[in-house]
Image 1: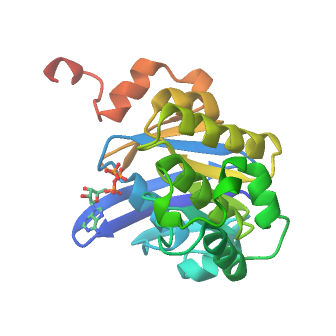
Image 2: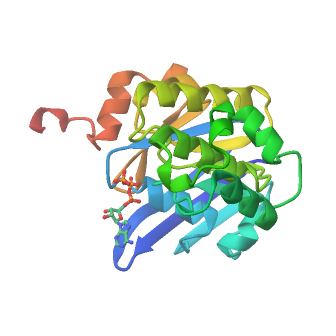
Length: 241
Ligand code: ATP
């Protein structure tokens, strides 16, 4: 568990700037939820933190250590693990194999196959099933479990509830709630479901067109303010939309 700090991160796809001069600080054991419309830059931001996308400018710090120059693989060693959008499991390997491979390539620690299954009990009946045959909710639980197997300090979860049934979302957030209550993980979660983000996060940022439009604790942010930020509406512009 460590603090995650972003300092003035800019990330581009060719000439297109997907994330612009974005900074935040997530204290140890806290949860930051990132919300924003499609194309706002959330996935690019997460990939830039994980080292899967190279930042054009700015710094990523884990516990005060600058990891900006490290590859994605080296960042896993530095304590960052990501469950990507789309979950990306090895479809023709079993759930157990998917988890064990992540464990072998990650850091050693308290997260093992047993502790992951205890935290995500919905995985247990499917340990020997091929990952390709799982439902969306099961795949999401395995993808988060796979990230935990690397024993990270910082857990990045892209699009937690996208495409899941309400019951599956409940199941995944039950498990994440226990992780949060244990205070053992610093988390950044991209969440499309605004109500869910408001109830789960310690802190929320809203992105629009690559820019951080809004930043605050859920209890200090009104729904109207978030909705405006979500669509990138600035004061005085609302009448034209
Ligand atoms: P979504 O919710 O649709 O996944 P997002 O908020 O995660 O959206 P990104 O996927 O980060 O946003 O995309 C931000 C911008 O960067 C978009 O305009 C997108 O078209 C563009 N973009 C994303 N990936 C690439 C890429 N590989 N090459 C070129 N442009 C890209």
